[in-house]
Length: 138
Image 1 (cartoon, rainbow, N blue to C red):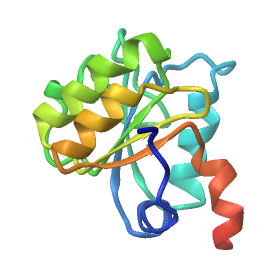
Image 2 (tube, rainbow, N blue to C red):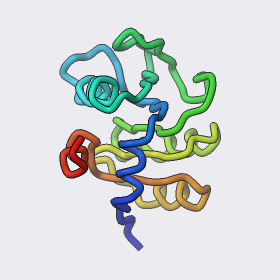
Image 3 (spheres, one colour):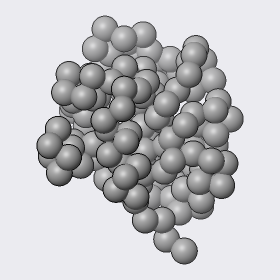
């Protein structure tokens, strides 16, 4: 069965303060993750933790190379990675005890979404906070 996003989950994730680990966030200004993470910080007041292969610091926030290295609680793992690689990121999110995974627009992995849901994580897939926020008046 295909995953269907729950509007109430989207609303809660975008309106309750949270700590978002943004996987795929680097200093490359051409990447969508840079603008979306800035939106999360500035417009929604979220904490952002950059996670990328190089562990770049972004927006003045310390970067990490993997979710397991991020200290403290992670509320949402925001996935800016290719669909063929997102399953491994979702598995890491489950392993570190994240509360939710958000697979960005165009990032689709039904098996990974199912695994996350079965592990008790909230799942949002194939959409973007910047696209969802206006419907919520954010």
